[in-house]
Image (cartoon, rainbow, N blue to C red; front, side):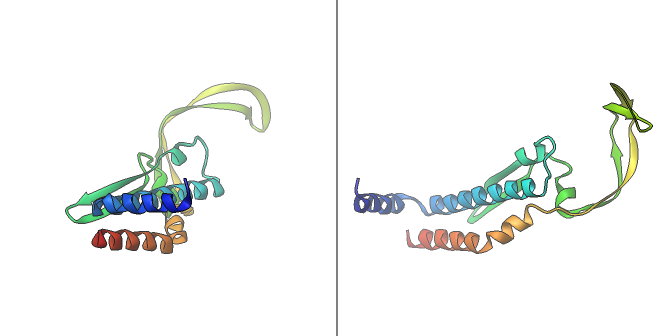
Length: 155
């Protein structure tokens, strides 16, 4: 197909869309952009151990009456906020099994030991990945929202 035909089809499709669809498309695009940038930020800061934080990044389009929005972040990961904002205080470490391969500075055959639940002081510096993603794409986000609402009011 020629570019002219494709352009005409795109215009026809946009005219057929409801204003809500245009706004939803814009917010979906924003969510995709931010989620990708958040994952880049997580990788750049070395916040990957098991991949749980990386895989928890999600976004959700929301609507209440005539108000539209986007929820985006790390879902189901308790320590996500500690990375984003830092944490200073006492934390509880659950009991767990640990594999050790040295004791008193000397190498030993690897063995599993049981670690009891305990509390410890934590002073974790902040390593944000959400706020920098929004800041990096702020003007693009504003442009997408503006275009969606302009298209919605003209549609």
